[in-house]
View 1 (cartoon, rainbow, N blue to C red):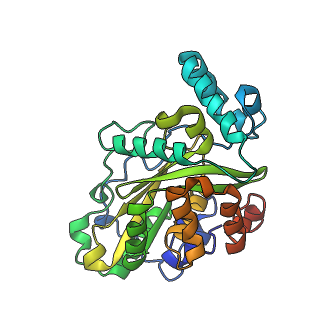
View 2 (cartoon, one colour):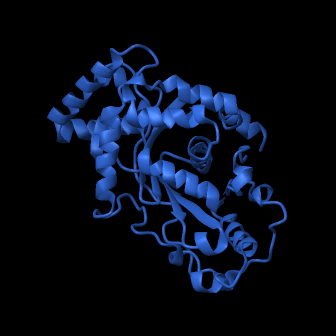
Length: 317
């Protein structure tokens, strides 16, 4: 179910038991006349995900998540063997670093290069290109409503859809946005039964794109997005809220996974704790000092890692 950080923003997720996730006190009758036609491509496919260990393809197979990406990796090996071998060699260099230490500079550069092309390239894998708030909501009509009424409409609409969504207070989004300008990338850890799977998140305008670390390592700047969080500041000044929703690749991520990653954005980018945001700064500006285990430790300390670990989360459903 929704983690503890979801409650502060009204972040929700439409899982199997949708009724339990409806925000308390926001069960207003559906305001269908305010909504535009159903959002296009709320759920769409992209590709890829995972963490890696060792060097060469044989070492990749030791990764517990390798099975999900075998086809993509083998396709790269067939279509461009030189690029494949080069990336395997770079993985070997990373593996030689001390345990818990990582040189993230290359990953950050790859994600930045990808972000630069997002505005000019056609969206891959079913993600909506230039997704606007008007494609979801009749903005002119809701301008006559209060922030509370808009929150009710937004939550009511998305509570019936398999996606994550939120209504973010303007001051919290301002803090996140300011930090995203200087620290556009970060490494997130998704709790799995096998341990943790790492994802790189990269801001591109008000969109936050996620792809797995194994995708970045094997596909570089061509690594496709698996999850996109869309933030809409259209009503920020007038109503004091920023609306958020998402699209994901349902072949590799489920709503629970997307919810966990969205919660971590709040944890790391909207925190008042300097030590927590310090990890984001280190990843972006002192990559040689960055430690993977610091992210996991922060998740465990916050309680988010335990709350959203598969098995434990399902027990609470």
